[in-house]
Length: 134
Image 1 (cartoon, rainbow, N blue to C red):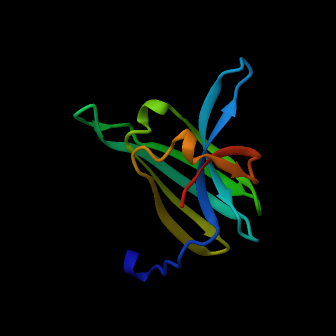
Image 2: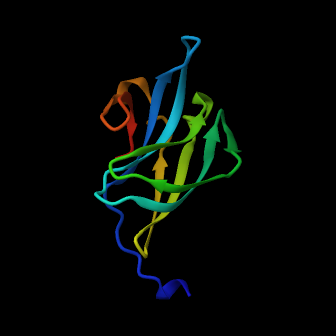
């Protein structure tokens, strides 16, 4: 049962929404999962969805699920592309993973209008500018 699983606090794992150039000199926004631990993350599951009010109407995106067998020590993995049209919504990412035999689980939410040019900073693990989840 769920009550029998010890959930330890998540440390040194975060998300970033990064603006990167494409081959045709355009720009795209991409979500990355960053592992700042000294141990790899195994069997990583990320679910994502957007929800909230946009242009006076309630909006909801599809729920997407992503699986990554391994994310190396001090590594970053691209999760998905994200379109600027949904930056005005709550963008929720639920991340579950194992370190050894211990399960970790955390929900990250980029609240509306936090993914902005003004909030960009350089992210060493990716080598690009983006918005790091606080």
